[in-house]
Image (tube, rainbow, N blue to C red):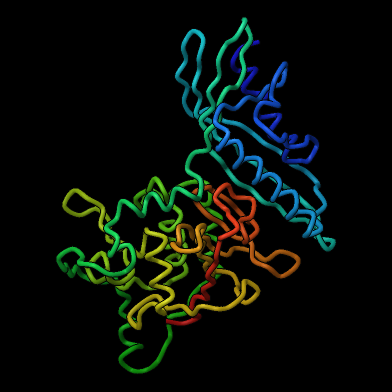
Length: 348
């Protein structure tokens, strides 16, 4: 058997487990004999096993009837040796289900590094490592000075380029006490669905892209930027200038956007109100996630409603479309997970 066949068997195995046709094993060493999957890293294996259990429980609690589940793989890069291969793959998953007499679809694209070795002339998967999952946002934020990522600290020198980084209509409306810039929720959702598994070349692509993606979606709905020229103030994206991309921390850092929205946004731009329940959200709203119950490290964008009236969200890192809002099936989810729910203003 070639390493390509072993990799195919692994993808097939993942699909069967997602459908509930195979029981998730209790320990990594249960993958033995002729079974296609092996894992040396028990910590990683536990994350996969726990997420699969939560996914099964969640679908049972919601009364979902599976109609179709499909997992397609795409090999992005291969480093091949005589007895060892490392493959970077993308697993594109489609889950179609029935609920309350309606059919819905959920999609996601997960990336993994799969290591295979040849033993006795037979290739086996020896280690798997999920890449770019939702927990990585916290690592991204650690690369930003703590005070700035939290919404404080000293920013870059102020630079004030020409508008329309701040919409002139919003300025006029603020000065006269009239609000007339409407948040186009449908346009925002259309943008979110267009770019859920790709990247708009007009913006920088971040290694951890969840908040950059959410900001783009909000902006596509006609929310005006509050351009200050300072990274720790306002909500803005300038683009390439002086050989580097310039953007506010609230535009691209999960915790910073959460703090900006929790403060209500700005009278000169994006505005939002925190609500108590996901049931109070509508299309074009935002959910923020804290996996450790302290620091918020992931954001999603509401693009649809489940039959029970709860939000379905799109996201980057992991790229997802119409995913159930609570993220219990995420590798990053813990019992300490907390959420914040933000309703974007209808007018600015």
